[in-house]
Image 1 (cartoon, rainbow, N blue to C red):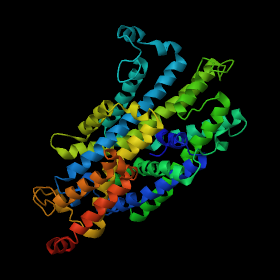
Image 2: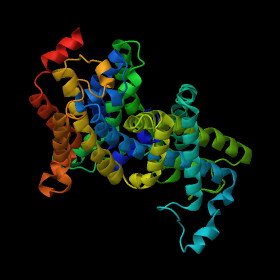
Image 3: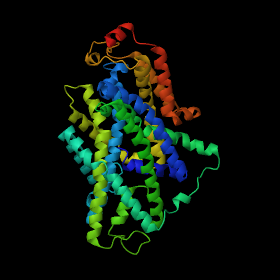
Length: 469
């Protein structure tokens, strides 16, 4: 899941905000080390009891209240689904432009009739067609079922890493070095100025995986042991995120030396590389031979599209599809839940979330972390402190069991959640408290965790006796 274009672009966003290359990489490494903690804590019940996230959430929020947490998680996943679908569509658009240059003018008569160059939310007609095409492919695989997803993941996942390694080798060779970005100094002249950007950026890095820190039981319930899932995640998450982001920095730095401009999006870099038209400042195409150029486009741009498809389904469809299905299992199947995810992913207009580093990191990543941090605080406090890792599996599936609380809702959990979200997001509306929004995930988690723990010192004796019997 970490081998994706948004990961590649993370360091670029931080450098665009004023950091130098090593400050950006350290921020990413630190943020992913922090978020590894709630991921591991919420992984435990998945492996121990074999339950997915929507069911696990019932222990703290209630058999009906769990839908509140699941829906908040699902809406964020829909945004990520849209972002990844837009990136995959961009790769297809670049590929079409390479093999058929007139593609860029397709639909020009339609846009002219509408007195503009765009027809939907800021997209041109060719980009919109590619976006929708990639969307259809995602939905098709979802409708083929989870076994198709599993088979697809096994061979598609490494493609972006292979592509990035090949791109790095080409860029460094062509630039005869690593380029100017590694020598670029930080724009911050003192610690105060640095921390003003560092804190919300760190929150954004935690927010990047705040989604998976909740629904990680969807995956760890298939683990053979706690040791397996812990080793896999500790070895995989911080290292992969840091190394892949660093590759993005190195490629971009070398590419700046080649093209004379900063290109943080690898799809754009591949578009320049495979374009039949000479890039600005060049005397001819980067690849003179037409057949070779098309072959490179097929291998590179379609690899990006396929790998993005792989990440999108695993990271952004499995959880919300389960969450929506959990609302009304008799009416909403996993496939229907996936379709709902796809439709919301379009309506969110995901390309606007990638419009600038400020929007991507400060608004999107930090903003939704203020919704998910409090959920993590409630769930972790409930499992580790209140119920002491003892769950009654049969009761999780009973509408009138011990996890029904009051009418299916746990008022304590909902109040703790509301308090955490309120504290995390109040800075959006009260300028003097903006610093709380900069710490959105941390502030929301701390408030919800503390409040829920204080209001629920221990489960009742009846629950403990029935759980251990």
